[in-house]
Length: 419
Image (cartoon, rainbow, N blue to C red):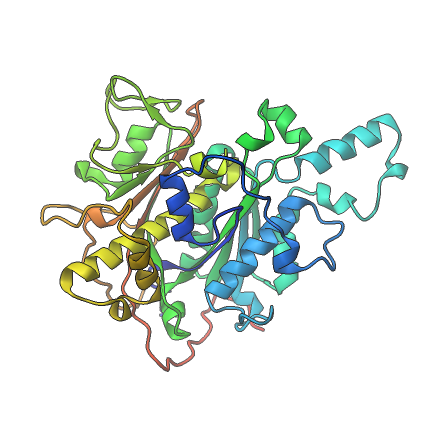
């Protein structure tokens, strides 16, 4: 029987945001939003150059920047190049954006209505395709695995993380680049009725990978994916990913979530008892959009990036309590220790419980993983909107460094394409 990929882990994070270039920086900005003049827009040319990008829309260029950063962070691309170090057919792409190329689509439709299709530029017309972002990321780096584009409302970013992990768990690919991106322009501002300074202009990317494949190539995992749920209300979603009323270590809330006087979330309809608080009030809460602007389809990926920053801080704190130094905790933990304990979650308690289900568990033949992770060491991420048509939830967990100094290359599994 073919061995499964093991649990699905995050091995790379990339950001293309003004004023935040690491998960820890994003977490700090979320905890203490910067006042004063807004940061300068992210310069895409500084990361990917200008050549070949003249006719690409801004959302695509931002996505290319975040994807390149994540691939390099995952050691799938060398720091001084852009060539993959693994076969391209072992890497898939899942992108999420609700508004990314809205301006191109609207302006194209308006041009056809007012004049004719003859007046359209053949260079800009491909940008009107709904899957242009995911396609260009794949073309740029030769990623020949499955290619998906999600435009699924407020939950789209977390849905993209879920489907990227599902591709890995199902054996379609060994790893997938998951991207969330949004930008603002006159068309988006008019549609949403909001000014540019209220909206995200940036991107985030993750590399999700089977733990077995990450271990085989010597990559260090930053987090492990836990249960994912999609429900009609926030309370039911939280209860599904954290059954038994277990309290997570931190909660990344839906966009502009606010708890009313009775404890009910404003803007998100719950399916539990009236006035029920879905997460204990003692759990730290973060709203990523307070730092980067309303993020729409990019929110879930941004939340995961910030959660990875929180997990690194929590890991550094745990190592400090047990006497382990930065060298033992790894470079991410050493950096987090230098940043200080701000916003770190509470230490794990002996009575904390873990969720009973794991969405991306070990496959057939995989080696057994470590013991259950206490809920207080896990990050809860939720996305939803004020119409409450859906709320998505995901848990991120810490993962031990299981890599070997000189691992053997793992063989392709049966469902993957050959080179």
